[in-house]
Amino acid sequence: MMDTPLNRVRRLSRTFEIVAIAGIVLIAAGAVLALVIPDWTRNLLLARLGQTGIALPLTPTTKLGVAAVVAVPIGVMLYGLWAVRGLFGEFARGDVFSAAACRRLEVFGITVLAQAPLGPLTATALALVTSYANPPGQRLLVLTLSINDYFALIVGGVLVAVARVMREAARLAEENASFV
Image (cartoon, rainbow, N blue to C red; front, top):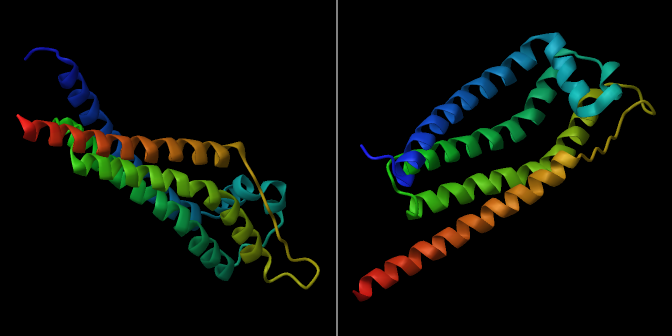
């Protein structure tokens, strides 16, 4: 088989399809373990809330609330990875400009874009859930902003725009092919 650019894309795509599947499995397993192992739960709170997360109580009710809060961004992330897994599958079959490939790229872009507001909202919700049992005056309202949230906004926007450009290019190519 000749080493053409499309064949290189196919090989790369097969590799990243496997990487996406591995990511889905590892993220799902890690999320469950982060809620089952108390030290991991504490690390999750520290990562999202900084030093504020050290003294927050980890009761079974609190852990259930934490699970409910982190389920949203993790669910969005897993949905995006599932879409990108399918995108790499399309590319591996040589369907680079198919409507399905464009749609999967757009879905992935939307999920990356969604992570931008989910970052600060998740931190705020985690602070509220974990400090709700505290007496009045000791409950927390936290707002965190990260460069990662901004980056997710930009990268997600670029991916959505590229997907829409690809869709339009595919439509124009199909239209031009019908004239021949």
